[in-house]
Amino acid sequence: MIPWDEYWKTYSTSKAEKWMIFERDKVLNKYIGKINSDKKKVIEIGCGFGSNITLLREKRSDCDCYALDYSEEAVKRVKERIPNTVQADCRETGFDDNFFDIVYSAGLMEHFKDEKPLLDEWKRILKPDGYMITFIPARYSLWQLYQLLHFGNWQHGYEKSYTHKSLTKLFSENGWQIVETGGIDPFSINGFLMKLFNKSFEPFWTKSPIKSGYTELYIVTKK
Image (cartoon, rainbow, N blue to C red; front, side, top):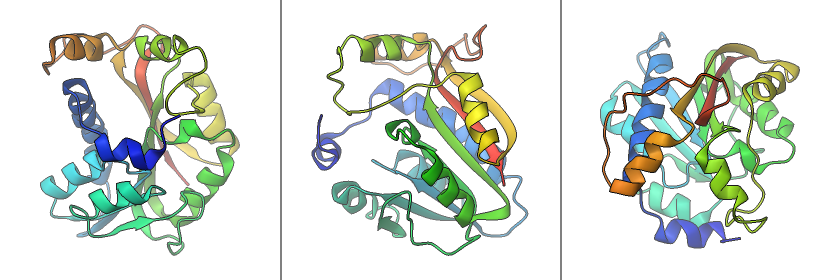
């Protein structure tokens, strides 16, 4: 397993990852637009390289952007772009109750065997009329095949994938109202081609015939 500080020191975004960032951004902007406030407080939990929160800050003057990560190196790099970046455990963020309009994460929740402490904390810091959005690995994709081919030696350590059914059940059982679910990149085909040719493009195939057949699933919830 690569230590996260070392990972973020050398990280760079691929063409496929940049496309995924823009696809996530579409979902985030849809729900930011539903918040009736002149200044929306938005936080990315487990920000890593901070790609999506940086994009939001560049595009939206109506958002106060925050970021949080456990990695000192990630916080150091992201803080140059997002001043409100803090180093903390995502299960004990240190923020006040009902503080944020939008709480979101991408590629974080799957690293925890027990998601309940995360979900409880995110519910605590989310405003009553706010939205929580998370993007996580879907079960049926080339990405999951790639992970399995490492035969247990996955560089990021423990990591799970989700089906649509297991994801919605998890949130329902923890008291969240489910607003929307969806997926990005059917079976990872588009991302695979972008990596292969090192080129981003607008894909013609965006819907999977099965709900869990994507690179990433996302779920939008309310308290």
